[in-house]
Image 1 (cartoon, rainbow, N blue to C red):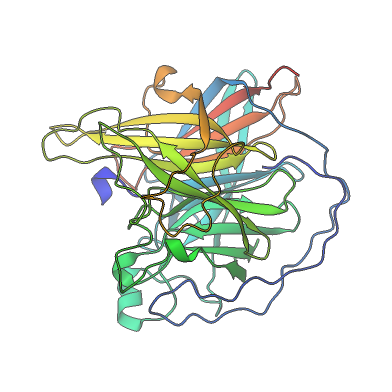
Image 2 (image 1 turned 90 degrees about the vertical axis):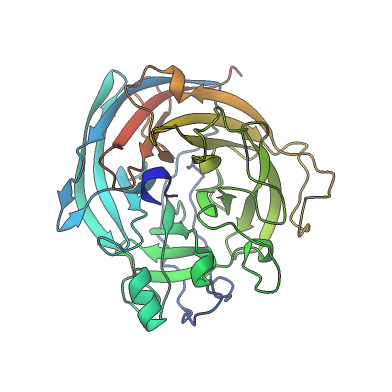
Length: 407
């Protein structure tokens, strides 16, 4: 999500599954996008570590900041809104939400170097352009409006598929262009493989005010611990569900679980916090989900980021990581609106408040992934911030050591 200035895997045993195709529903409301009949190539994974995660608390290891306007292979590095790590080949990927404005929609490969004592470096090793079903790169807004072909991709989250050698990524869509959010699968060279359709409740309905709010749509995603299902998170509440958070009250947004064919298995209401501080008079403020990450079959981590503009136009960010549990929460997947419904939201527990860690700057943190195992056997967690290609913001990586619950 652009704000302010610039308006998972727990291992499983050896797996070999049949390739799959996904539902053929277009992600576009008013544009014709060709659909693929391809199936996902399956990687033969001989050994996936058996691992059941829990999270009790985290301790910050350190941080590392990339320079502003860093260029790499002819691209401007910034807008990093998603990060993912593959523990089996130690590959890191970072996705940019550039919307093809500066360079075509892309993700970066990187080496992320840290240990239990500190954060050393982040080195980019490659850049890959994501492709549309017809093999072309994604257009920017101007190109789309002039040609009305393809879609503008506002890519926000990226995940390695633990059962194949592919990646899945999400786009927020654009109500002003009539483009719905989408979930797509791609090969590591960026080629389109397939997609699954978002829920009807989240889509644009030209006859009524419903569906996603612009720039507050598919912001987070994660595979389940066993790799068999895919979770997504709406950044903010659907129009028909709730009002936006304000300094007096929070609101409810949706977290959805799909199977690998795109069928909705469950959906839950997530309670967003109230905005933690009053903005300046007439200034902007919001609070939203920017990423999710599966812990185990019933628990996930949720990254919340509030951004508050002061009287002088400057922004302060407030970032928290919560643990949520699906136990006892109401399945709202059959509810077109929860506005008048009696629902039990997901239970949330604060894991860490980034504003309490003594960081020089807490910025627009949007990406979150499990990282490598530390020498003592503990998991690590890595975050990345989206600088919105703005010189007053930073691209910062933050690493944490994760302590499990006592068993």
